[in-house]
Picture 1: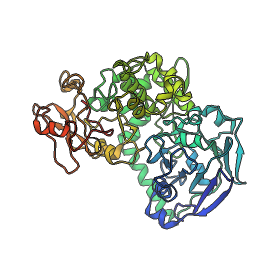
Picture 2: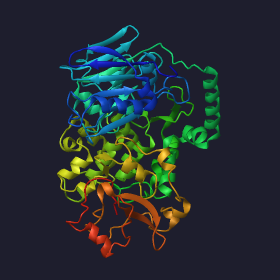
Picture 3: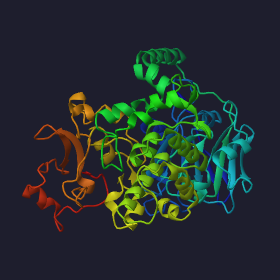
Picture 4: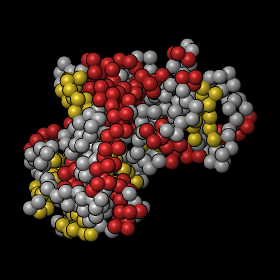
Amino acid sequence: MEGWMGKILVVDLTSGAVETQPLDMEIARLYVGGRGLGARLLWDLVGPEVEPLAPENVLIFATGPLTASGFQTSNRFSVSTKSPLTGTVLDANSGGWWGMQLKRTGYDAVIVKGRAETPVYIEIVPEGVAIKDAAHLWGMTAAQTAEALGQDNNRRNVLCIGPAGEHMVRIAAIMNDATRSLARGGPGAVMGSKNLKAIVVAGKEKVEFDDKERFRFLQYEATKMLKANPVTSQAFPEFGTSVVMNLVNAIGALPTRNFQQSHFDRAELISGEALTDRLLVKNQACWACPIACTRVTQTSKAEGEGPEYETAWAFGAACEIDDLEAIAEANYLCNDLGLDTISTGATIACAMELAERGLIDTDLRFGRADLLLKTVEDIAYRRDLGDAMAEGSARLAASCGAPELSMSVKGLEMPAYDPRGMQGPGPALRHEQPGRVPHARQHAQRRGVGPAQARGPAAGAGQGQLRDPAPGHRRRDRLAGDLQVHQHRGRRGVPGARAHLADGRALPHERNDPRRRAHLEPGAALQPARGLHARR
């Protein structure tokens, strides 16, 4: 079937029923890949009235036509559900081995419905599909669960939640192959709400294409492209995804101190180069991936994988922390407990600013690397302040009367790209499906962002700082859902942010311009609301 297995597995945890349905090939053609297929199935199965943590919500694990084909990087798969963080469509994507193994079981997608009365796990193997008791697994970390269920990258793979998912933390991730994650938007909380601890897959079927010669030719061409590209052939294999840390920082697009600044003066200490020099044990690759960007690392206290770029940013620059070992250990802990590292780090950064403003009573402050691990644990187990932080930064900040301090879009924490320094992520954050992280395809949308517009030290002293125009007024001039932020050259050549209304009209740049104030005064037609904040 040209990459498709032609079957969907439907598991109802409430009734215990297991059903195989045919894949609608017209839908598969129109909604390409695991993300497209999952989004369409979710549209058909879940209405707007369904609460994300209700049994009526579904979890959809979907592959694409290339998954398990042997094509370069054909290991990836998606999860689609209704997000407990945003209340709308969630799509998260992961690599590793589990997606390949799911496809080899003979299914293109798995739909999980309902809620089990007690903890269970699903096993999908050549002998059949079974729902099994998971009482002995409840409370285990992701690594412990994977080991207990026989994780073997070549034969048997485990997808599971950790304690954060069990406690329905809204920023909980689903972990596969122990250290890979489906993280954005809180899918782990949905899985936990269903009392579903894990899904184990082991398969033997192969993906077939009618024109095998053509497929092999495309593989050959893709290999040439990957080898010719300096990022995929040199930068990522040698330094991992954090190789972009210094680059993003140099152009003034590295959010720092909860987006108060766009340049971190100690970024080189948490960069891919520093990680390679100080913590790297070896490289590791996902199935069928020639890039091998995964970092197996070791600190003085622990060993694990990562951190990736956005994790290093979330626990690093966002929190004004330059302790690479503390960042790596926070990453290991998030993987084990099943937390989205981006939202976790961003929520901690939000709490740090709330604390510095006297809005919450905690010792958290920017730069407090010594409190990272305890705070991560408190979030996963909903202890003390961690219970409020487990709701995500938007709910945390709103509960303190300062919703503008949450750097989020539709409730989802923004990733490691400041839209004031990179044009692509601005429209992407405004219009993308919540749960998606702006990556290379959005970066390609940038125009005119280069060394001449860099806001780092090379561009002039102090230009990397985003200064308050007046005490107490930072970020109050945002226009929520109708606002788009992009880089431009100011009157004196200093880059800044400029707002555009939905109809394309630009707000006047000067803050004292009465035309601008008219849009921003209380009672104006456009009211501030949470969304993409033009933070100053």
